[in-house]
Length: 149
Image 1 (cartoon, rainbow, N blue to C red):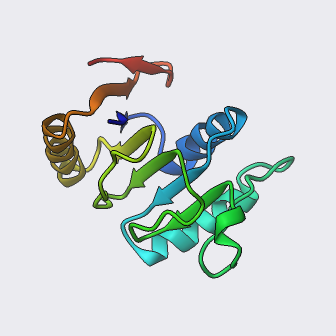
Image 2: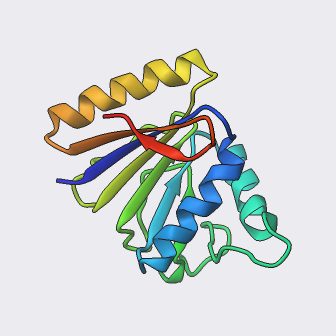
Protein backbone atom coordinates (compact mmCIF):
# COMPACT_ATOMS: atom_id res chain seq x y z
CA UNK A 1 0.00 0.00 0.00
CA UNK A 2 1.05 3.57 -0.64
CA UNK A 3 1.28 6.59 1.60
CA UNK A 4 -1.35 8.95 0.19
CA UNK A 5 -0.98 12.64 0.97
CA UNK A 6 -3.56 15.34 0.40
CA UNK A 7 -2.24 18.91 0.07
CA UNK A 8 -4.98 21.51 0.50
CA UNK A 9 -3.80 24.68 -1.26
CA UNK A 10 -5.16 27.71 0.58
CA UNK A 11 -2.39 30.33 0.34
CA UNK A 12 -0.45 29.61 -2.84
CA UNK A 13 -1.43 28.28 -6.25
CA UNK A 14 -0.25 24.98 -7.64
CA UNK A 15 2.36 26.74 -9.79
CA UNK A 16 4.14 27.99 -6.66
CA UNK A 17 3.84 24.77 -4.66
CA UNK A 18 4.52 21.96 -7.14
CA UNK A 19 8.14 22.82 -8.06
CA UNK A 20 9.26 22.72 -4.42
CA UNK A 21 7.57 19.39 -3.79
CA UNK A 22 9.16 17.95 -6.94
CA UNK A 23 12.58 19.24 -5.87
CA UNK A 24 12.16 17.41 -2.56
CA UNK A 25 11.36 14.18 -4.40
CA UNK A 26 14.41 14.53 -6.64
CA UNK A 27 16.67 15.17 -3.62
CA UNK A 28 15.42 11.85 -2.26
CA UNK A 29 16.19 10.27 -5.64
CA UNK A 30 12.55 9.40 -6.24
CA UNK A 31 11.25 9.22 -9.77
CA UNK A 32 7.96 11.07 -10.22
CA UNK A 33 4.91 11.10 -12.48
CA UNK A 34 2.70 14.19 -12.43
CA UNK A 35 -0.78 13.44 -13.75
CA UNK A 36 -2.84 16.44 -14.82
CA UNK A 37 -6.54 16.72 -15.52
CA UNK A 38 -6.10 17.98 -19.11
CA UNK A 39 -3.50 18.01 -21.89
CA UNK A 40 -3.47 21.82 -21.75
CA UNK A 41 -2.51 21.79 -18.06
CA UNK A 42 0.21 19.25 -18.83
CA UNK A 43 1.68 21.63 -21.42
CA UNK A 44 1.45 24.58 -19.02
CA UNK A 45 3.29 22.69 -16.27
CA UNK A 46 5.90 21.58 -18.80
CA UNK A 47 6.64 25.23 -19.59
CA UNK A 48 6.56 26.19 -15.90
CA UNK A 49 9.14 23.61 -14.82
CA UNK A 50 11.66 25.00 -17.31
CA UNK A 51 11.21 28.59 -16.14
CA UNK A 52 9.89 28.68 -12.56
CA UNK A 53 13.21 30.07 -11.24
CA UNK A 54 15.78 32.25 -12.93
CA UNK A 55 18.70 30.16 -11.66
CA UNK A 56 17.32 26.66 -12.07
CA UNK A 57 14.91 24.28 -13.78
CA UNK A 58 13.49 20.87 -12.98
CA UNK A 59 14.59 18.06 -15.29
CA UNK A 60 11.44 16.53 -16.72
CA UNK A 61 9.73 15.45 -19.89
CA UNK A 62 6.49 14.49 -21.60
CA UNK A 63 5.61 11.91 -24.22
CA UNK A 64 6.30 14.60 -26.85
CA UNK A 65 9.95 14.70 -25.75
CA UNK A 66 10.62 10.98 -26.07
CA UNK A 67 12.98 9.05 -23.78
CA UNK A 68 10.15 8.66 -21.26
CA UNK A 69 11.93 5.98 -19.24
CA UNK A 70 14.90 8.29 -18.63
CA UNK A 71 12.87 11.22 -17.26
CA UNK A 72 13.20 11.82 -13.49
CA UNK A 73 9.87 13.68 -13.63
CA UNK A 74 7.32 12.71 -16.25
CA UNK A 75 4.24 14.83 -16.99
CA UNK A 76 1.12 13.19 -18.36
CA UNK A 77 -2.66 13.49 -18.44
CA UNK A 78 -2.99 9.70 -18.55
CA UNK A 79 -2.45 6.79 -16.21
CA UNK A 80 0.93 5.82 -17.69
CA UNK A 81 4.13 5.41 -15.65
CA UNK A 82 6.87 5.05 -18.27
CA UNK A 83 9.70 6.18 -15.98
CA UNK A 84 8.97 3.67 -13.20
CA UNK A 85 8.01 6.44 -10.78
CA UNK A 86 7.98 5.97 -7.01
CA UNK A 87 5.66 8.94 -6.47
CA UNK A 88 2.53 9.97 -8.37
CA UNK A 89 1.23 13.53 -8.11
CA UNK A 90 -2.38 14.17 -9.10
CA UNK A 91 -3.42 17.73 -9.91
CA UNK A 92 -6.49 19.44 -11.33
CA UNK A 93 -8.82 16.65 -10.29
CA UNK A 94 -6.94 13.98 -12.27
CA UNK A 95 -8.47 10.53 -11.82
CA UNK A 96 -5.83 8.28 -10.28
CA UNK A 97 -4.90 4.81 -11.39
CA UNK A 98 -4.31 2.15 -8.73
CA UNK A 99 -1.85 3.79 -6.32
CA UNK A 100 -0.67 0.50 -4.78
CA UNK A 101 2.49 0.25 -6.93
CA UNK A 102 3.74 3.66 -5.69
CA UNK A 103 5.50 4.61 -2.48
CA UNK A 104 3.43 7.78 -2.42
CA UNK A 105 0.37 9.24 -4.05
CA UNK A 106 0.05 13.01 -3.69
CA UNK A 107 -3.19 14.90 -4.36
CA UNK A 108 -2.87 18.68 -4.68
CA UNK A 109 -6.18 20.52 -4.66
CA UNK A 110 -7.30 24.14 -4.68
CA UNK A 111 -9.16 25.06 -1.50
CA UNK A 112 -10.88 27.90 -3.35
CA UNK A 113 -12.58 25.51 -5.77
CA UNK A 114 -15.58 23.79 -4.10
CA UNK A 115 -15.68 21.07 -6.78
CA UNK A 116 -11.99 20.29 -6.24
CA UNK A 117 -12.57 20.04 -2.48
CA UNK A 118 -15.52 17.67 -2.99
CA UNK A 119 -13.46 15.59 -5.41
CA UNK A 120 -10.59 15.40 -2.90
CA UNK A 121 -13.01 14.15 -0.25
CA UNK A 122 -14.09 11.41 -2.63
CA UNK A 123 -10.48 10.47 -3.35
CA UNK A 124 -9.79 10.42 0.41
CA UNK A 125 -12.62 7.93 0.95
CA UNK A 126 -11.46 5.77 -1.95
CA UNK A 127 -7.84 5.74 -0.77
CA UNK A 128 -8.90 4.88 2.77
CA UNK A 129 -11.15 2.08 1.53
CA UNK A 130 -8.20 0.72 -0.50
CA UNK A 131 -6.14 0.47 2.69
CA UNK A 132 -3.62 3.24 1.98
CA UNK A 133 -2.03 5.25 4.81
CA UNK A 134 -3.51 8.75 4.47
CA UNK A 135 -2.38 12.18 5.69
CA UNK A 136 -3.88 15.60 5.14
CA UNK A 137 -1.79 18.77 4.93
CA UNK A 138 -3.05 22.34 4.80
CA UNK A 139 -1.21 25.60 4.30
CA UNK A 140 -1.13 27.61 7.50
CA UNK A 141 -1.09 31.39 7.96
CA UNK A 142 2.63 31.53 7.12
CA UNK A 143 2.20 29.35 4.03
CA UNK A 144 4.00 26.42 5.70
CA UNK A 145 2.41 22.98 5.59
CA UNK A 146 0.59 21.86 8.72
CA UNK A 147 -0.42 18.26 9.23
CA UNK A 148 -4.13 18.23 10.08
CA UNK A 149 -5.02 14.54 9.84
